[in-house]
Image 1 (tube, rainbow, N blue to C red):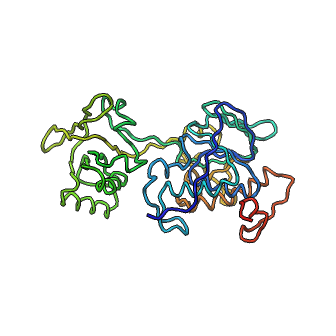
Image 2: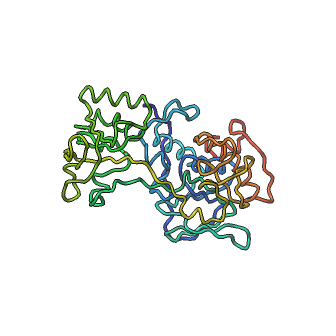
Image 3: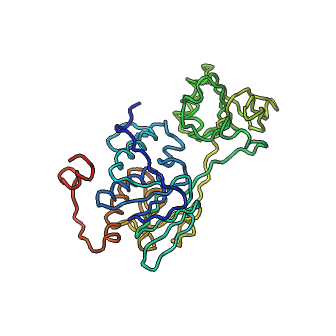
Length: 357
């Protein structure tokens, strides 16, 4: 699988509880937030990013780091982590500062019209511009309702696949009927010792092609399919030995396994962003299509978090929104300066910023 070229930058993380000043605060360090750093950097604007996850990349890095993406311009195929690494390499010249594993908790407008954003860990960041690039907000997995689940989470019960090799020669049970469950059944079956897919009904919400591939593996004896509900876990000291199941046809039974991958979808929550004083429409933030500014001057929203007529929830659309946002952000952050539009192909000033002159 071809990846985007370029070594990832060393992520500069701020110490919790410190005071900071910058040109732009970006809430969300997914692909759209990362590319916004690039567009802002070309204009000489510095940025701090806040994300509830412990690494940049958003859903691409958290949910499908090894899953291929096919609709990024000029990249016929790239993984979620490959795209993240390429974006980090691209923004390295602009030295962004990350506030990771902490939620944006409080926003206030200062007398000088700047914003002060405070995180749950006590960091306070002040800037004249705030950009919300939080995707669907903070997201949490829907967990199976099983007693004693917490004892196995992070060890043998997983809600995402970050490294496929972790499951090599393991006996895995995958629970769910959507795209994630089917995709990981297909991707992990070749390397796992045994793979069982369990779903409460023999009807799947995944792409028809994936369902057909799964059924072919079942027919070939390479994947076991059980139409049943997960009812409990068997194991000790954080290590699974079996999953307890219940089916209409055969009643209660167990599936021996070392790992359970539960893909029941995600619950999206805006979290404290909902308290930022913005107009909301079904948990999305309406914006104009000239600057992607919200109802609050100086606050912009780009990526999946925003809404406007004709909105498409695509990464490439978020990149476009970030480019136009940066032009408007410059006028706020540098009110006394003239904005000159330049091209990276011909501007030696921009090429010096990028370190390629």
